[in-house]
Image 1 (cartoon, helix red, strand yellow):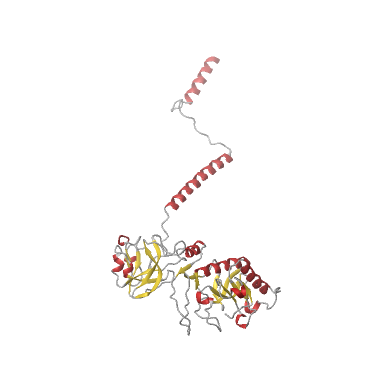
Image 2 (cartoon, rainbow, N blue to C red):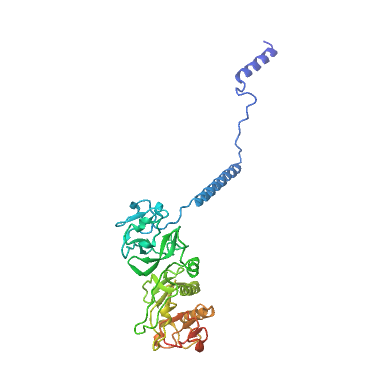
Length: 389
């Protein structure tokens, strides 16, 4: 066999061993992954970013469908779909189609209602307070239990959405009224109440019947827009002078603002609790026939402060008498605090322990609105007491 024939035979064998591509010449080429790992990481990162965007979109969707904050479940005032949701003795559900948005747990009452830990205080609302389109409440008897307004549980309005804080009368005791959450009504809260809420102050608006001090029936103690300040106040615990908690402190609304201002002033210095001797007492100033500012709940006797390092500064232990230059840490703290309050016009009158032994253990601070003492002290006063309160 010559050389040419041998070459043709070899070409034929090669062509036979390599068949044509069965998908045809128009088939897209197979993608070969790049060898650069960094490119793969970038692509993965882009995918992750896309996933994060999807998550964000999902979060936005979740926000758009968040349920209303209807507060704690299972007790008077809680939302409900059936009586089974009202898990307490004789609990019933006042349904949405009976005028109570998303339902409201209740129970019949003739004067008082049960209270539960972890829930707003309750009130027995006179049946006549309910509208004709709320017959289920009237059908419970003399009254129906509802929750009282509480800005700890409902910081914006004091009540669940679609319920308003209104003044309601107690069943079988028409002279007793309380701020209570009732559906589809205009609020009875004042601008002072709403400004407390805007500051994030937990409180319960209330109504206190005016009274007279013993032996002074012609005088009347009346609190302007009374509230219970709920401890802690803006993060600072309110304690009695002996360290026991005072979870609810009665005050005029304006005094609640002043006490909040006081707390905001001392908190940056490490204060974690404010200790006091009291606010409201219906009485006269000692030796006079003039009502004390405590009779209006716009005064408080401040005993001292607890700090985050464990220190406790009290007037009885740390106040340095008859000096404008205290040398101890506690003395300087108390002296400087009182003068800051005075400079910032937080209180109208600030009485220090320098007057007499009756004031040796507290600051008396109040909101005297240009009173009998104006001729003696001017519109504001700080220092030894001009009177023994």
